[in-house]
Image (cartoon, rainbow, N blue to C red; front, side, top):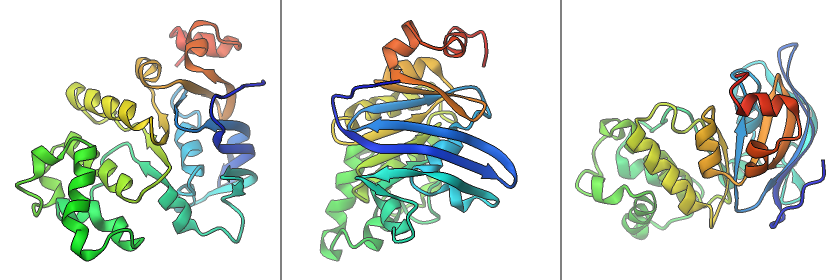
Length: 258
């Protein structure tokens, strides 16, 4: 399939093969992720969506028995799986937000600054302003300004997810991966995350795994449809929902399978 993008791709995937032990999880995946757009990854449960997104910043290798068996993932023209590639640098530039908020066991402020300190992105004298900047970016500052020293676990689920996003943004990435970021949130918190995605799209490339077809349609401009470990179709979101090329895609978006 030939697809034209208004932006050059942020990531390119070629012939990607992934296994868990001896079992195949992804087979012959090739696609491009357009820059400064939201790309939705959708498909039935167990089709490889989360596995795929974790290959894009090498967090998959943190899973026991998982391995990339073949193919390549290019970021800025470089294969992130090349032996000379710095894994820490890749994960700085390509951040990930998980399904359930993973706040660190420390204060709200320390959570925001954790990665930025590690990557030497902030001077000690500027830490207060730096933390405030990214808490404001995710609409959290007014809610936590009086409890920056409180343990992050005291925040609500929606607040913790926005805190995780603030921590990721503080690392100054160019790509943000989101693996079902709203599945554990209530409707109000989900709406706020979706609003943030729309705001951040102007500056960042965003890839969001979602089981919610309505959400995919609301927030994305480009969509990848996976089925049983294979990429069945990719293209503009509107086209995927209104005039898909593949019968399996049509059955999925109309609710016949899933």
